[in-house]
Image 1 (spheres, rainbow, N blue to C red):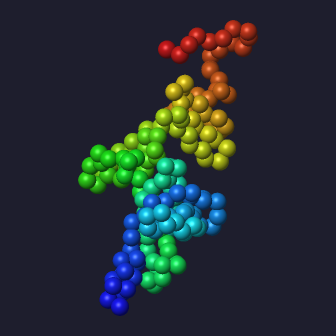
Image 2: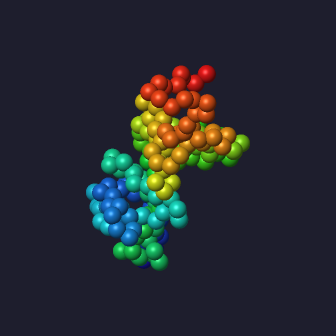
Image 3: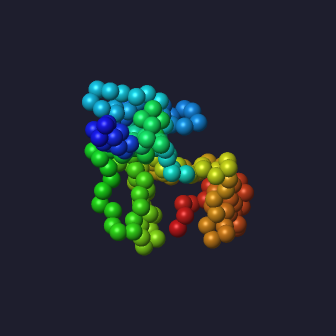
Amino acid sequence: MEKEVADKMRGMVRRATIRNVKDDGETQTASVEVADGIWRDDVEIMHPYGMAANPPEDGGLVVLLAVGGDEGDLVALPAGNPWKRMGGLNPGDAGVYNESGDKVIVRRDGTVEIAAGAALRASVGGVVFTVSPAGVDITGGYVRHNGKDIGDTHTHGGVTPGASETDVPV
């Protein structure tokens, strides 16, 4: 009887490997390895409100909880992947990252650092601002600097209309 109780207690909280994450429903689920070679499917992964992640296909690690001690009612805490973890943060810093090295770091001093391998894109309504290795592209809306229109519809005063174009900015 004592061994049975000890085994039950050990089964209430455990570390598990996950695979086959499904992220297309109301909840995110995965297959979890609860013991060597023993898998359970469709285990819900709990995420803090406002945060979401889908671990790389090579898997991740979770802490499993048996709700009410029932090993048939498992939930997993958010997945980690120690092999891909972003390190080097200073005390008070917070970061979001992916397996490719893209990241957003909010520094304790109020600095926000963004590193993107392919592009950084911000969109608000119909305006899209994209920074890529090729340059900066703004689609939609207008562009102003110190209240002056510098976008594609701006005009220059003191220019006689005609076929000529103005010189480049000085």
